[in-house]
Image 1 (cartoon, one colour):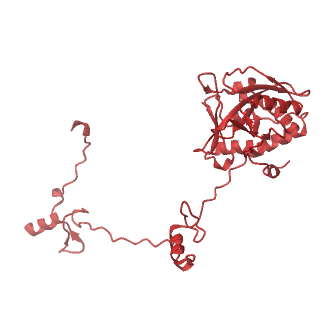
Image 2 (cartoon, rainbow, N blue to C red; image 1 turned 90 degrees about the horizontal axis):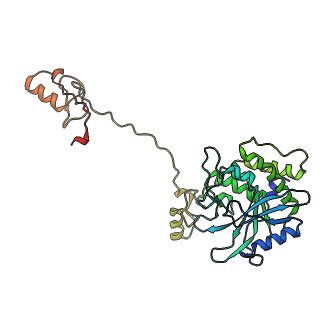
Image 3 (cartoon, rainbow, N blue to C red; image 1 turned 45 degrees about the horizontal axis):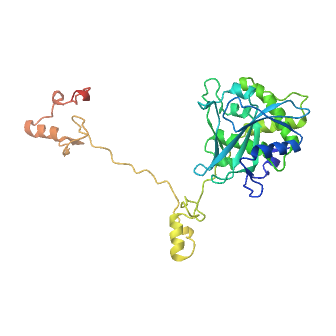
Length: 341
């Protein structure tokens, strides 16, 4: 399976007919997993702040702890947010907890703030991704207590948040009405393998005895981890390619011209931004005698080229001689202490 084929997957969109009530989520989810051949057992949550915690297994797979959270939509940030912390003090989860107490994370999304229903689409991914993107606490990394999930990963401002959501939306997105058993089994196997890497161990591929689907899922995940974020396309005026107005596809000049004459602004009126040559400023005047640059009045040097300052010219008029260097007043360089005044 190639990345290009995965990009064509369905988007997260609310479906009114298949939304689930918040109170029935645990029961419905457990029944759908049972129909797909999974054994699901409710487990006491060791971190005491999760909505639901399940142990999922099959005849071929051991029990794997699945940590379930519900994310609420934030209109201002255009993202789903959920608190991800441990204990009543709400401290960031440690990476050691990811490998021992929870190997998979399951995220459901509220359909709206007012309606207490859950969307059928959900995310099921290895908890190692929280360690890889430094959402968990390990070493000098303090971790985070809030996770943000974007329907469109390009809305994320930070590069790490973009890559995190891009991987989840492409590889680890499922539908509760159409559960893919093979894909979930691959996620479980990959989660059990990556749980060993949460203790700062070097990343290694799954063992050779693992199914081909696990190796393919691991390869796709590594490829997306190393994928660079595409450059954002800046908006431009549809007529002159300058910066457009905030609410129109035209800039202010093109919009006003079209509003007045009912025709597009012609090309000959669009001024090209050409770089003009720098104008060479005339050199500053300097006294040929004392070399000062500032004075109240400049006078022509009667003995040769250049100019005199007002002080040197007054001295020459009175004494019929050039002002000597010993009379040049130098600016005093003092270190003033402003706190003493």
